[in-house]
Figure (cartoon, rainbow, N blue to C red):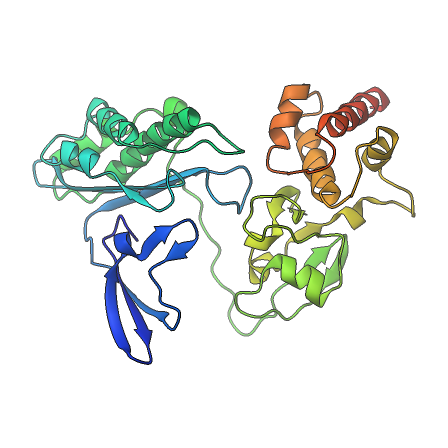
Length: 352
């Protein structure tokens, strides 16, 4: 919204007012909304011909991004940058618009070197803080990398009105090997005609049909509707990892996933690890190595570790520590958890 110069309408019993998106966010999880106001409308100016791209780095699917960047670029008939927009999230207590980088691009040919320079300008204008997950220096470095990628994609997707502009767009996008980006050629199936019931979700191997409310999270559905209390509610903001479940085999923070989005998908909680009433070998390793104290973080730790080891069975201790960075524990000091995961990995590997 900040990159798009959106305007938000706030309404209350005493009237309505309009606020620019850049002024709407006032700090961490705080906005300009008054106590009696509701957000009733978001007006986004038309950006016809502008290519847009969003890049983000998050610790797991659905988490708040460690760093995210939205970039928009439009080209004139000569293939030069007519307008540019760059905005960051995760680098301050509110979204940040990189106006200096935008100014550096306007009127210029969007070559790979020019885009890289603009990304450097955007990065150097940031002053992020360190936190429990990444350092300030790493966050700045990541912001520069993601800005470069987003700008390259935005240029490639812009609708320059000439063949010359098309050539510039092709030249501005670096090779796939260095950027990790390739246009999607996936063809989506046509929707079926006539009424059809959405497929049920699979929870711990059992098909379940559940009616959910708009806005209801997967965590709320599991705990409040289905009574699956082995999924813990911690921060409610995707930070602590206590509510982790496996969604199609990948760890997600269930407090940030909409329940309506999991129809037809497989969900696994820690309850689904047992077989014939026996603990999973990873659970046994946690017990054997004293990796469980209060137990609140344990379900998320187990599921995250298991999903990681399935993809990286010979992971080092440092790699396991990195994989568990999104799961916070106040009791154990983490050492015994790492001991347990490594012991399970060694035994599992030997058994295989």
